[in-house]
Image (cartoon, rainbow, N blue to C red; front, side):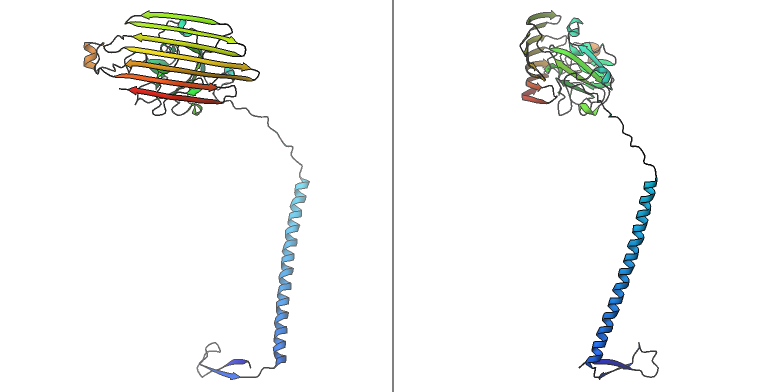
Length: 356
């Protein structure tokens, strides 16, 4: 049995949606009436779905018509010819570790100093020779000849910790600025065994951090086409003595270069003696498209550091040592391998520096 709800309105009611009283009555509903209601509901659902499908088809037809119209307009327009630009080559100001590009192809100001000009100039060291270049000056913070400060366009490179460093220095393509505060100890470099020096002026991110004023690229010597054995002996004021020899040559595709240097000096100030000992060797191989080098150096130095003087002491006696006892005693073993493809491995073993 099915039940149906009817409403009985009392006086004062507003309408059938505000009933005051509900009366439930059980009324019989025949099976024929029930079937009629089901058929009517099914017909309504079928009509509704048919209308929705016709509407969707109409929208799709309008979209296809607009798409075809746009394609026809594009076909009617003349096709533009594709313009292909030539390849653009960008040369960065990098010449490490060899010289793969001519100077005219480098977008930077570069000055190249041949190694043979340095001993012929009569200057005591490399830093003194570089002062002949424009904008290069020297300062003396440590008070000895082995550790002068180099300044290029106002940016310094020095062994003194705490001074802002603005120049990067490379040895055979390996950056030798110390990783702590970017200082450079020139007494640890084989400055007597130089093939050429390149001074690349201006700031560049290619040479590492703090490359603000310039980058100095030092290329060491290789063995020549013929065998040479050259001993050297020199002396000077304030007890300067220097003993040196080098041997170089070529045997087939292999070239070799070996050098040893020992120098000492009493210094012109009190307690400012310098002792430098260095052994350097370089082995090269050229064959076909291969050009590789392997170099190694051993350094054992002891450098006394008088330092600066107060103005009152400077006026009295420039040779005095205000803080006697400071010295620098490094021992270094340093090896570098380079090949023509610019791939390089840097082997730095047992860099033991004792500073007091």
